[in-house]
Length: 260
Image 1 (tube, one colour):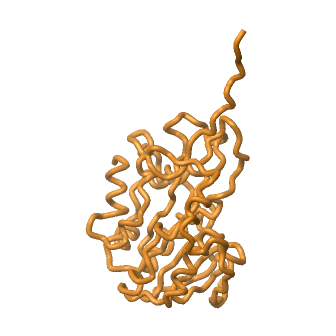
Image 2: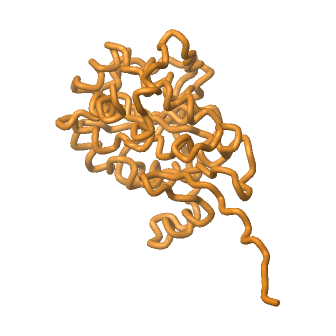
Image 3: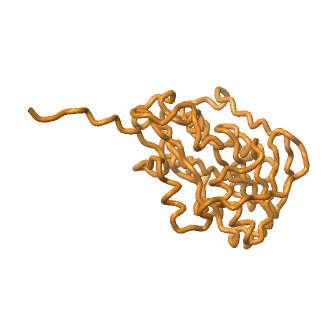
């Protein structure tokens, strides 16, 4: 299968959640990547919490790297439609080795997405199921510091990367559950969740490693919330990719020279 074939499985044309599936990592998949053996790829979610099937609930999984994708595959078994929101690139097209990237394990995400999803995931995608949005919690952190010659594939989310509260409500969704490891959601995600909350969507937090009752989310309004300049300010220091999403090599300093 090509990357386009796999993207069309994850984002079929008639599905109402397909517009939010990010195509960037699928664009990196080629025939060689498809030689990966499903049995050779270990993908553990580490989820201890059980959400159960809730038709009125959207889920946001904000866990590290492949753990978030694995959690989405698990939750598909409970009747949630996985929506990958990974909006970054691995650097492989530029020939950058993974140890020269700011983020880790992006190439592993590509390998997992290169394999046709299991039948229960396909069924969850084409069924009339509430969404589970999948994020990498390390999107603004990584194994390397940004430096000249390093592939900077840090990324972040914006309210436009998610459906609006009005759209969610029109699909019968009245609450959202955020599954994460940290006490509070990351600030870029808070910009999304607060808009939902202000519009009447109840927000709850769930520790991925604990089977505890849900906690109502309480947020401080982040700086520049709903500001017209928020996006421009937030993007400062991040690198966009010509193929879409985030990621490019940080330029080397211009070689010195002169006249005479």
